[in-house]
Length: 402
Image (cartoon, rainbow, N blue to C red; front, side, top):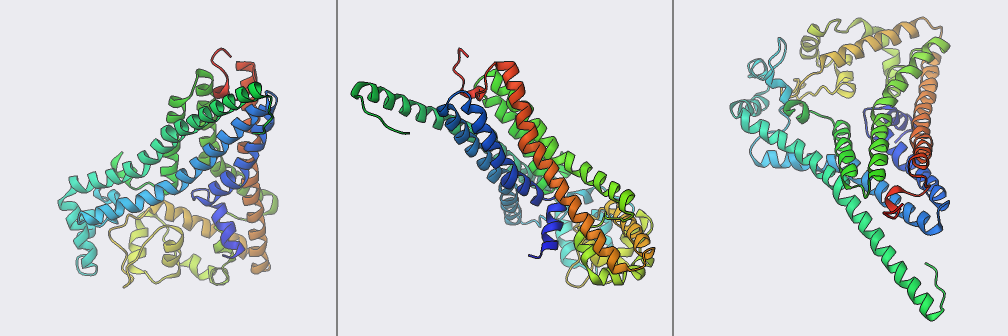
């Protein structure tokens, strides 16, 4: 994987890559160090227990959180196929629009995509059952991770601490006795992306963690922590990226809103003038453009960057919903970039400058978000913990009388 693909993946705040980098590579290691140092103020045993619990909790949760929805979504698609339906029939098509809808697409693609039409007809004729299957797939891919992360994993983690504490108590008693020393919403839900499903499971995780908290102080802390983490993971990076890109435009007179992979593509840069002249200008024109010009450069770009799907014969897949708003936004960004590059003396130099700025913005976004998640938020929690409980130790590890 080239560096530009890595930059593109990490810069996609609606994808999993930036979450993985922030969560597993930066945030968790930093949190483990901060947790150990904070609890060491109470005792070394408290620090060891706190770090062990945090390690299991953070990495166990991340594994389920990132991998669970993807694997379970595939299982759900397999089960839908076993029931005789094609899971690729998009639920949004059941709402008929002027330019797309399940009945509209069946009529339009009857002759040119008969197999896809057959899939849509079966889904339409058994609408209730198909919707229940899709809703079941959503439930499968979210409720199981929520249960595992929010309820089962914490209980197992707490139980492990109890077992270790009991073992340490017995060892301590043996030491004292023998003087020895030892060391020791159906359519919306069905069409959610994996990242959106992760956000839903995060909400369920927060509820589960608060529910399973060992005392009210731990419940308060977990509720605050998980709510802030959801904001810093799913909301803040998107607005931060827009802010950084907007600032770059003002400071460096360079438009960097496009995906770095696209700005790195020499064919795109060299043919940008022709592409810009051959674009749909209104949302109402998007569907017609994609269907009449499937081999155009823009249609191919929409495949890669806007989720448009074509069959092997270059007929647009009628089972898939086309997000015309997203495509028009893409059109507008291409036009802005084209105006910027046309106003420069050297188009290749402009493109390289844009990629460099975009890369810095992406790194800054990851760095700032990670700092807030890994350092600022834990320090704020430690401050509030001390003020509320009067102790530096993890609230769940405090004795009941504390």
